[in-house]
Amino acid sequence: MEWTKEKYNAAYNSYVPWLEDKYLAYFGENKTSYTAKEQLKSTKITGDKNIDAVQDGLAEGLGGQLSSGGLLGGVGDMSSKQGMNRAERGDMGPLDQAKLKEEEQKTQQQGKGWTETLSAGYLGGAKK
Image: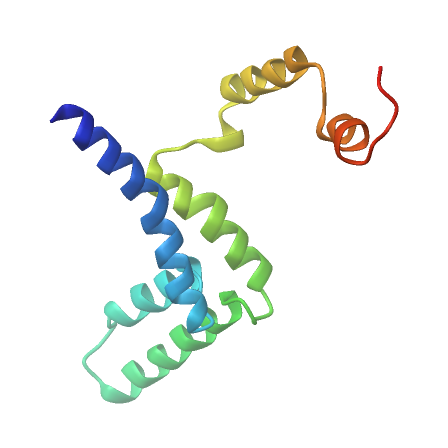
């Protein structure tokens, strides 16, 4: 039973962020732009409908700039993938220096990089 829970949680943490990204991409959004829009729309400053309309317009404008086609689309896409998805999984990624050094040591111990494998194996390059 414990093994099943672990496998389910691992699959959930892998596929749900991917599904969310695909769903939002269908509408031209990413997690950063969607979150910015929702947070700015959810907190109304006053009860005045004119000010609320201006606030909603600003939320749409900012979210639109952070979306995939916006002026800051690269920033929104990067923070969505590298920030939010990793935060949801609890993964520090390249920010964890100990983990980064460990991965570098593993690749050095393997001896071959992808270019050596590609040229020697797949493209029929000279054998060493």
